[in-house]
Length: 435
Image 1 (cartoon, rainbow, N blue to C red):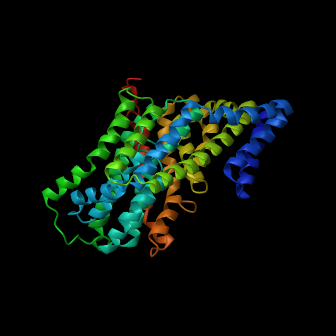
Image 2: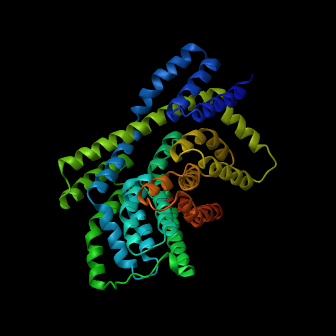
Image 3: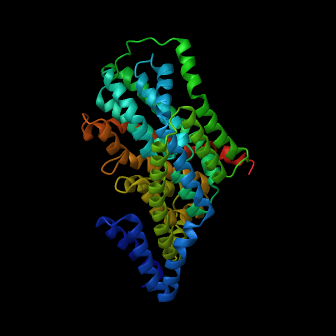
């Protein structure tokens, strides 16, 4: 068998191991080591499996992950989610469906401090859904909008998915962060418009709030969240203007979140301990998956499968936009069965050389991949955000939540189409960066 054929066999082995419910990190590592052993021999394979874990875990760029996770965890325990949601409600509550739109706005703001879609959905959902229940919003509508709004967590920077993509492809994490800003704002706007139009089209899903909210109360609400907005601007603005590297920005964000918690009188030993433990657990999980992916990527490199595939596809008499459309469809289908981070790690080493050979910008493709990951978070049967929201909205059947997210999945597809037609929406800001 040719090395490329062995690469295909290795991918099939990994898929079988995952289907047998083996942890994704172990499945990638075993398939990668076995394939390397066959292709390169005992000593190169053993050397790789000995060196890759250390070289990966000691990579300076990976230190950005625990910093931003810690920032999000501290913001969560300090009660920031409640401030964001109720401030958004003060401004949008007078509109029919205002609580749903406030949920989207608070998801977008919390995403700028979190980096995780599941955490964003859980944090906002635990506050927004009981409020919408209080005002008799229909479960399909309320649960659907929060599940979809949570997906903004991996598009609006800081994003764990963009960090991992940048490490695998050796692209600038700072530029990837900045590239996600405009698409993230656009997607949040699409979600808001869908929530508004749905409530206008079917008034029963979102009754009017019986209360009127004055301008004084709105200004007080805005004043209560200005430190959060200032911290987000400091972190993202620092990356954009070249004040900080992404890792330094993560450290500044983490320090700022501790300051916010202290100002809210939530910096207790219990909250600090909870934040540190959750950060450690999530960081270890991500590191293990990245290490497994790197071992598998080493195997793919010596099999030459990605290069063979890119040469084969480049030689096809097919428009490159037809190929990118096929890749997006493949990612959307894969996302239905594999969680977002795993899908990113599994497919990037194979698809990235193809995309580069087709002369698409790698930063642009990182954003497109992230949006495809977002689709996987709310599509059956894996849809992690839907499962999280089902745990919060216990009176709403799972099938109802999946039906409730359909308009938002369509919005994600429309955004991908717009970004394919107008790639500068992604690339303009990164090209203006100081470094």
